Length: 212
Image 1 (tube, rainbow, N blue to C red):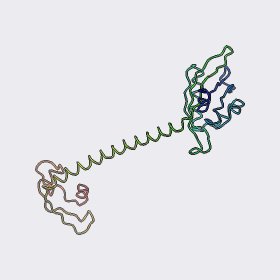
Image 2: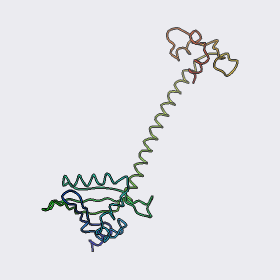
Image 3: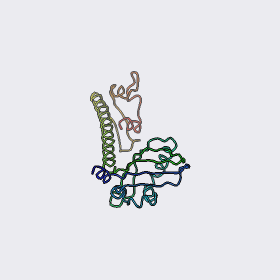
Image 4: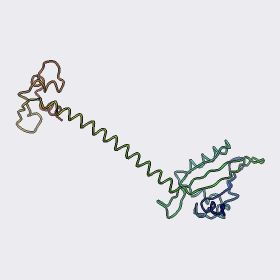
């Protein structure tokens, strides 16, 4: 009964390749293949490509690389990928597999493991990751805004003590002329020494740049 429940939630399998990591096949696939992978156990055992061929194009390279690494090192194989499955978002479903390889006397390799439905947890994880990244981005933006606000609040505090006058015949920068200014204005713009702003700048373009 317990095995039956497991097989409803996973595809139990054995998977083999020859001594050259070729001629892949599934000697065994449990009935859970239909619910989990969208293909019958009989189809999987008849042709491994019935399952492998469903792997998303963007995941195929990493799939084959992971199998090759497990084959070479006889290391545990764990992999998560998207498999073609009508009815799911973009017609792809997230699956994950875990298995352990064993080298056989004839040089072939066999893996015993299971494929599970990982769609809900993977999509939830992606959603949480996006929310975390969004929150971090918002915190950074808020920090930058606070920094800018503090900068300009300080600037306006300083400008409270500034007295200056501008003569302008139009909104064109070239028509702007400063004809009176207090010393604190020059100090605020760090013009240096005892120089007054009036003595240093009489160019409307420069003035506008300083006030921007």
